[in-house]
Length: 311
Ligand code: A2P
Image 1 (cartoon, rainbow, N blue to C red):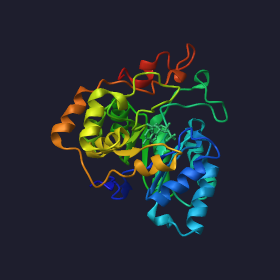
Image 2 (image 1 turned 30 degrees about the horizontal axis):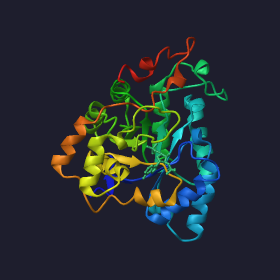
Image 3 (image 1 turned 180 degrees about the vertical axis):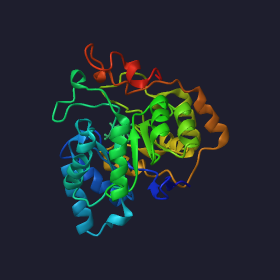
């Protein structure tokens, strides 16, 4: 089930991708290599993670070693906040393509509703007002050019999604957001599904052990442990499988080969209906509130401004 999802472009997006955010330099290349060897066909990247050159080297080696062919991989990346000006969008994808050593991307996303002056450090006081219609029009040109075979957004709230859908000539193929059993995104998922936008989940494990998130991990919630024990799967596998059954692709991060394999082993079993209904009892906590976007003189004065009150 759900080895891939069909995007509104008609292309197939493999349902499990390797997330590469904040993965330590030196470790990410090996993780990408191990993941593709384990069967992953989808790698999610971004210049903001500062590791695309290393991923490019790993991809080159995978092709040279005949582990996989380019056409069998799905590679996504994102537009850097300093490249939102329409005239800078092409440069944004070109830098990524050069670093990843690719001719095209399968998916290119506006990374977040965050814009900085070109070349400025991405800190909250450096944010400048967004002009999503202008940036999106430049993204549409990339889609037409074929450099990006699908385009979309990331970290867009329902409100931002509705605003974009109202002006888009090319409907975004994907909205990549935090989603997992501990932050289920029901409203956003429904909005996306009813408009043909695929919801893709970053941090599908709820970032266990992340120093940036100090809340309770749903992976150790007794309801969750009960479901995992009943299915004889690990809590991580149950979280990822829940995502697939909700119709979202999942992008777990790991630099550990055993866990990389564990996270891919979610296709030949399923969560039955009676257990799926238990997920509604899991307390909801967003792990990435993005306090770092807030600044008294910046364009986001509160976290709620950024998420449009949706957390
Ligand atoms: P590690 O790289 O040591 O495996 P998310 O994708 O939700 O942001 O979570 C990423 C974190 O989850 C990483 O710290 C990763 O650590 C850890 N992780 C990945 N897979 C598993 C797993 N199967 N079980 C427990 N922790 C995992």
